[in-house]
Length: 332
Image (tube, rainbow, N blue to C red):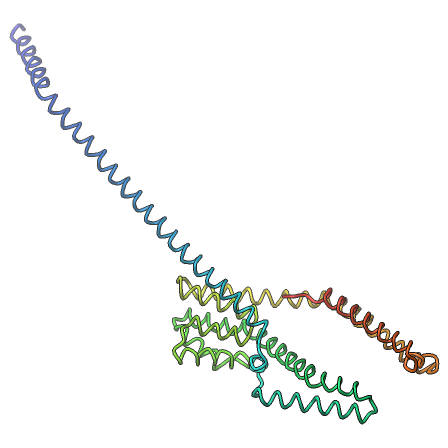
């Protein structure tokens, strides 16, 4: 037993001595591994922070690029809006779809004014009145007719424009480039969308960029719908993105806009009918009074005081018609 105890004590003493000698080295290695782990963790944290900073810088750069593009588009839009409001006669002729030169339009206007003045003279009107009728016929009637044809063509364009955008979306999603889809629209859609997109394709063939080509579409058709289309294509060409998805959203917006326009027109039809009846009522009553009692109402036409009353009544009637029209005319 004494020998066994001696061996056990010697073993414990030797283990303690070994631990006392090796423990500082083990502690050094442990500290070294701990410092290495901390260094690797700090490196990974620094890398993550650097990647996050790079991503933030990239997002900020992209946002700045998009903002710059939007500011540029906004300035161009203001210039285009001023240009659209102050369109020249030859530009309006193109927008109306007429194949007339400026010279032909001026000659037709002068001829219409002369004819109306001669008709007024033949009917017994005074020379001053005939001259006024000629001026109205030469300056007012042709421009009114041009504006009517222009608005009618723009309405037809809006009715078919959403379908044309859908054709572009389907072409892009099937893998075709934007140029080919525009050619498809210029070849397959009805007028006036066909001719307007044909001008866009012609501009691309002449070397214009896509942004400049679609801006020509807005110049020929100064509508909110074509402005939306030009903005979407311009932003996609400058900042990138999914053009098919953007145009699909634009098509949905155009259809919702058209549906809302029809709803508003239907809701305002009663007010328009009331305004038309109120505006026509004085003329109807005057005509009926003339049929029943011509001597009673002829004073308005044969005396100076009656003429003055007619002029004042006409002025107030015009003011009332303008006010009612502004009240029931909604801008979409």
